[in-house]
Amino acid sequence: MANPLRNRFKRSDSHLRLAATVLAGAVLLGGCFTGERPSFDDEEPLQTESGDEAVDAILERLDAVAPTQFTAQYEILTRLGGLDSAATVVQADNSRRSITINNVRFIDSADTVATCDLASGKCEATLNDARVSDLLLSHEFYGKSFARRLRVDANRRVGDTNSYTITQAGQQVLCVDVPVSGGTVSYCALDSGPLARYDGNDLFIQMTSMTDVPDESKFATS
Image: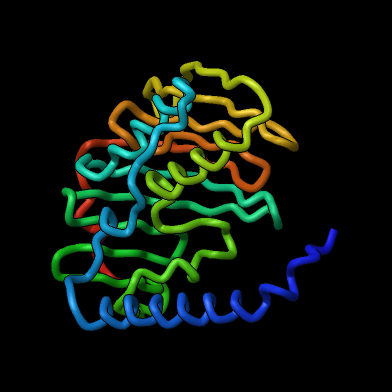
């Protein structure tokens, strides 16, 4: 129903929105001229618990991916369009990461920040998730991206969660099923942090192999 006071406050609301826009622009401009390039961690909001023990056990793992060294292989199904993809995630340490999704490679290290097309060998000096947006993914799908998803799903759950363990990529992993409107979403993570399995109405992701040895070849740009 329309608000009878809307016209009365329309002018003052416009002034407030203009002031907020000017302030936000000033902050953004200040950020453009000062400070270091944000790291993965700098871009994240403060980590919060959901209040559900089963969900928080998975969040604790996904939030802790950063310091872990590993090479992980994934199979990914984007249900819309039935798109099959392969991905490799490598963390050599907390400052060197390579995420390859099909022919797109994201590199984030002390001396290289790039998104590369492995077929053409061409790179751009930024982490550009638009290159894989048709797959409904980001380069952080194995950790922080799906921690954010899980927090959203936990907030909109319509019933009790279910915690259990399965074997994935030869390892025992912890899982949680979250009932939401339209179905149940499943998240699984290794004790060391990385996403091991995700089953939702948009994507199906499963880890197929995992080693604690970083594959240095995955830091090549072509």
